[in-house]
Image (cartoon, rainbow over the protein chains, first blue to last red):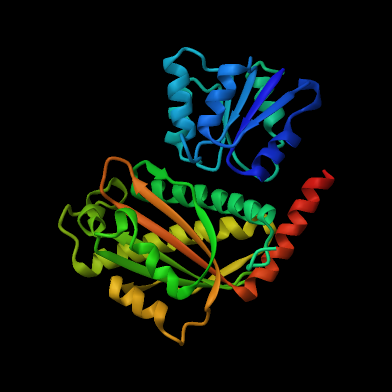
Length: 119
Length: 211
């Protein structure tokens, strides 16, 4: 499965790479901002997107909104430090399948993938 | 190595930890005020304190009257934090769901000041703890105190008695959705704290590489 990790932090992208379960068989590509994420999706068949919210050059909300408008939202798990309840509600309305609070030990990612039927 | 002694990789890691702290602070602010908080990408830069006042001379802040609360912190990391509010805070704060007064009356000046101190205490606490917690370090806080308006901020930052001269400055902006309320949290980590942060970030990156 091709997995797109979108985060402006190199550390966050590395943590997410390591948190992905091996059984997913992930072929990982990365984007460091929202605009790059949209370009990646336009040219790749993305089976899963892990998306940060607070980013330069189009934040995660804008990425989801543009993808929703074009009817091309890949299965998306938002992984964000923004833990406001409304933030989670909004990204789900924009087509995300799950919202995970960012942490240094994102061990719950496997559970979330299973619940979302992606693993 | 940069002037701060942190490589770009370590600065990126520190910025991500700040991002997590900012997320916690934004959630604390949203809970306290009962409104959605728009978060911007935080910045982490090496600077001297006399340059800090210049951060209020750009963008939306340049034309605003401001009000600042300061709060030093101690422990694993020793530093200084400041929460700055724009002029709309005074008029909007009492109307926000989380701060409505029980008797629906207009808050007095003292009540408004108390609201700002409370708010700064919650947000700065969440922000600084968010930075320290991943390192399994604890930080204690002095009580927040009113610093005053723009001139007072400049005077404070220019004063030779200020304990720090240069270091890392963390800059986080919070905006309330649909309102003019704008606030900025500045966290100053002076040079003596940087060595500890450098060690903690190194440990974190090593653990991640080994995992």
